[in-house]
Length: 257
Ligand SMILES: Cc1cc2nc3c(=O)[nH]c(=O)nc-3n(C[C@H](O)[C@H](O)[C@H](O)COP(=O)(O)O)c2cc1C
Ligand code: SF4
Ligand code: SF4
Image (cartoon, rainbow, N blue to C red; front, side, top):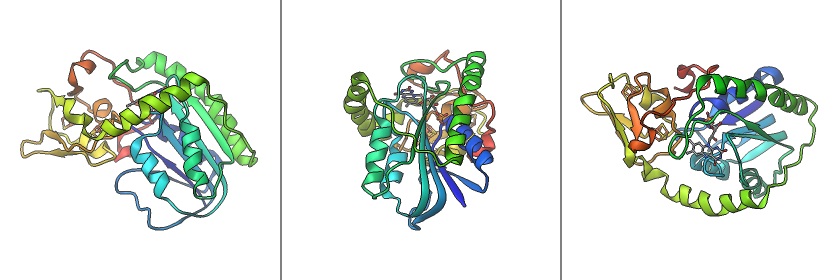
């Protein structure tokens, strides 16, 4: 049995994990959330990890998950990250965590995917996002072949700027992320559907008696609530007003519940 663990906000990581799982076969695809069990040591033939880059590092919940897991058996281990522009030193940081468990990585991968980041930038509009996904497909197929052939793929060298951003910005992001949800608010468009609460990987949103979302200050900044809200009712300060919303076009919202 093969196993892929993924973390996602807008669905890109699940898209990549599913592409690989379908092609290698006999594969469980498991979402990393705050409810994931870590007590059982992992046993798999192929063991994979797919995660998005946040502030040139790993999502905090995903990093904590990697720190805590135990691995009993994994014949081949791969990790694939996806990002919009620059992944910094995140793969090296992932590798360090795995080496602490005496299990180095057999294959590293990086895929450029559409941006879902809104706070200091903007998400790609639909047409541009579709082109980026088309461009990513051959890269994902190459990774599938590598996995099939159990090929060793070394980590890519990271330039000084990437290392610098990971070393300086990521720790600031990680230490502030949980309470960063103070800037979320919702508009009158909210219809109380509860999708924001269902897609949140950290159960950080509860609905009050009027079925309005309340953020609980253990946020991951995954942006899932903003992007998947069918009413476009969620904003993060004034920074997200008038900006695009993006969800991976090949992923259904129910796959994140
Ligand atoms: C909080 C946050 C921080 C991000 N930081 C980076 C970054 O440092 N570098 C980058 O290239 N992309 C960054 N992104 C973009 C995502 O890594 C990218 O869109 C990814 O494909 C999203 O994957 P997902 O759909 O699985 O959530 C960031 C996105 C978010 C939400
Ligand atoms: S997903 Fe949007 S519309 Fe639905 S409850 Fe949340 S904020 Fe309201
Ligand atoms: S509150 Fe929104 S941004 Fe924060 S973890 Fe949940 S879905 Fe992600």
